[in-house]
Image (cartoon, rainbow, N blue to C red; front, side, top):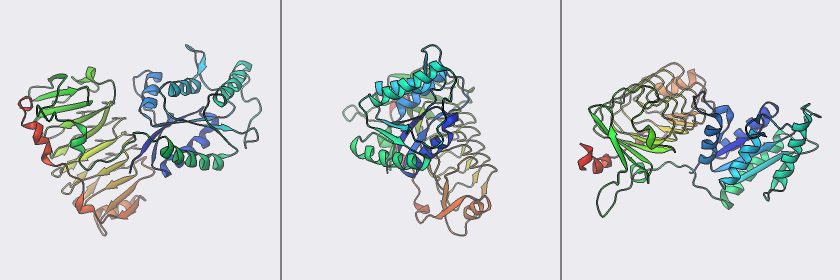
Length: 391
């Protein structure tokens, strides 16, 4: 089933309850909410990060009450209005929800600045006259119902690309030229003495070959200048381990196939904010501390049979994570492994260590009859491993 990313735009302090209601409604309807609550502390210009998240999104929800909000001094407009204008420019479907005149909790003249009050009135009028259908809500429950109704109608009437789990992920991530039997490479280089990388701009795929990725300084990747949008990563099937900090804070990574390495290092994918899909191969024994901590858009994980140990805080603050399939082979799960994952369900076998762990930590647990049929990556990666540049 596809999941759709939805950007939530609004002022914040006056609409905290409303934003939470919208997020809950979206999660209940197979969507991934994105908003300022999930924004990380990161040395990136705020507006640049906002536009990246809006561009990635399938739908744009805007909530407008009676406050104009923080003004971007350079443009003399609020961030909310700029976000609205940008979403329209990008032709992203906009779902607008305006507080009704009789809405509960309306505050008379909430801002003393007359200029901001006038601008808010003009902004509301601007949305109403923009040509889109506007919904008016009276309270939080009314808003939640209308958001759920609207997002489902839009999935049908204005279908978007969305995100989905792929059984044959490797076949969809990179494209083989059937005539030349090779991948077209547009950039390449080295990562240490034992590793090579190749980047295909057309398919937005980063391919890393060799047996060992050298430990990299945070944010200093040899392929950094090749990726200005989210990309997919394919690792060599010859890779032995994924080093500590190997991809930490690589914010452009969208999906990755992990070959049968023995272990995934400390903070290996820490802070990969755009990471959506991780496909694990059978053969992995251990995932170390904080390996996927802060991957705020990761929503489902299938861990392979044979894995024995999950480190501390491995999925900490993965806010969108809803399902984790954990096999019986797991006998140790570290502290805070799922801290901040408020909507998570762990699936596993009855009377297993995993079930006991879930019960002990107050995490929802469900029996998984398909636990023995976890998704594994086939050795199809060998198709390109045999090519000349993969040596």
